[in-house]
Image (cartoon, rainbow, N blue to C red; front, top):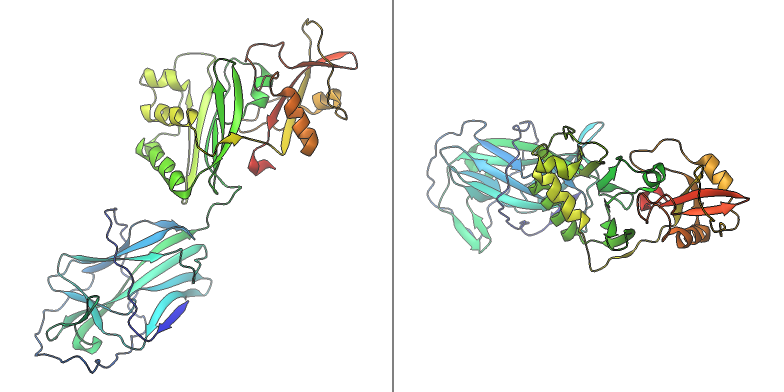
Length: 430
């Protein structure tokens, strides 16, 4: 996108203390910027010669290697490692290109009627600026981008002339003997959507009945639009309630920052050395800003206390297990997976199955044999029928009830007693 303005285009200065991403110098065959005449209001003084600049002593960097479209700001820094000052154009010094099949095409730049040397970078100093991917007049498409700036040096200049508090005239482009184009590339990622999972924590396995494993869902899942679905366990009733909440962008970033502060991205992929049996394995899965990582740990709390897994994993799990939010409400699934197993052990009288139109024999015939590590899918019911199933099973099935009480969730149909359970489908499944 090209923006043409009649006055000088200046972006807001932003300095932040983040590590810089090194980028190689860009090509030097970019078309020469057309020099413009000096504004008539500015008087030129006696020039002073400067030393010649060595190529490669000026670099351009970005604060990160990748950004999310419609969300992030790109902080650009030009660093001068030379022994003399260098100068940048006053008019929107950045030129932004997007990689296409044919090469590079202009994505954003400012074209001005008046342009001159307007930014001075002293030796050992840096100039930082911010380019927003949230501007209403330009939406960045996902892809690889290159940002360029023209650097002028070996200049013979007069005294600088202050035009306004935000504009200083140092001279014309032709007053400099050296012009170097430096560039840096970065990725722009598509923003996460309501179906994109960016954080997932689930525990499975251990010495529990198969029905419990079939109906077990995650402890916490966070989607790209800020929607969180999480389990709240009541120790007094031994019941779990699935809740949902809507997090703001700031809250999402705070949560991800908490996970990063606990060393998640530096962890190993698995911790399985705990010398104990019959306990579950917990999986942590994060995908954000182009990074993806899964960490599994067997017998999480035991392993941490024995020094067999990092304490940061326990901190993350406890934080999510105790998660609460002002907007939290009970999660209302639009679909559920229903599971049934014919009871082969001796039981007393079981209440009749109350949901019409569902044959427990059919449910049992379609129930899986093995547990899926992520989410086990069973006999799917939707809409009003799904809500009726939840109403019937929420207080009596293995999903919500005591783990080892095999008499929970028993129903009879056509003279056969079944153990019945359900798992609410999550937003990305519906």
